[in-house]
Image 1 (cartoon, rainbow, N blue to C red):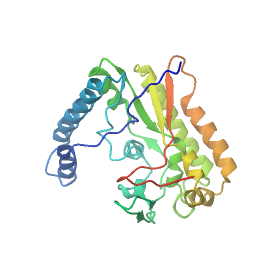
Image 2: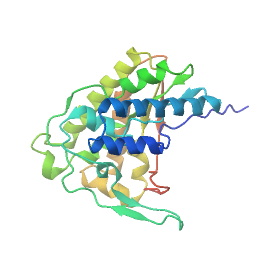
Image 3: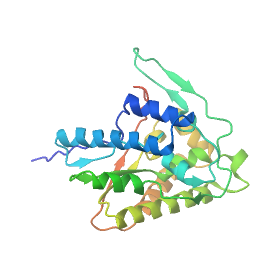
Image 4: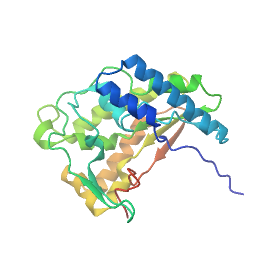
Length: 255
C-alpha cells in the first residue's frame, strides 16, 4: 500500500489587503507595526485555510516575505540594495493565455560587502506559526546555491575573490539558522528551490556555468552545501522543494 501525504509547498497567494499594506509601508503611509498587524491577519487566515483542508503540516503562507529568498537579503548586510527584480529576472515561459515574459538580470546585482547577519532570517515566522496552530509547523529556507545569483565577478571580487568563499558564508548563515530553528522546536524544515532543476535547461544552466563551474561541479557542490546546511539534527524532518520556477502562471526552466 502506498501512503500519500500532502502539504503546502510554502507560499500562498497574498490577499489584496496585504499587498496594499506593503505598498503603503513602502510609501511611508503606515508604520511597521501597522504592517505587522496586517501580516499577522494574513498568516492567521492561511493557517485556518490549511487546517480546514485537513492538512497535518501547515506553513504561514510566507506572508511576510517579498520573495521566498528575500529573508536572507533583508536580514544580512552585504548584499547591497535590491528589489524584487533581483529574484525574478530570467526568460519566463507561459501558455498562450499568459504568454512569455522576460526580465534582464540587474546590472548592479552582486554582493558588495562581507555578509554580516543582523537578525535571524525566519525564527520570528516560525515562533508565530507554532504559537497559532496545533498542527506540525513547517518553515522554509532558501537553498544556498540560489545565492550564486548574488556573486558577480565585476562587483564582488573585492570582498569575495571567489564564488566558493561567498557561498561558504551563505552556508554558515543558513546552517546557524537551522540550528536556532531546531533549538526553538522546529521539527520540519524545507530547503527551497535548490538549483538542480536549473541545470537541466540550456538557457538557465548557462548562467551557472558563467560563474566558472561545470554542471557536474554545480551538482556536487550543491549537494554538499545543502547537506552542510541540514547538519545533524535527529528527529527533524528536512524537505526539498525542487522547482522549475513559478511566477505569474509562467515557468522558468524545462528539461
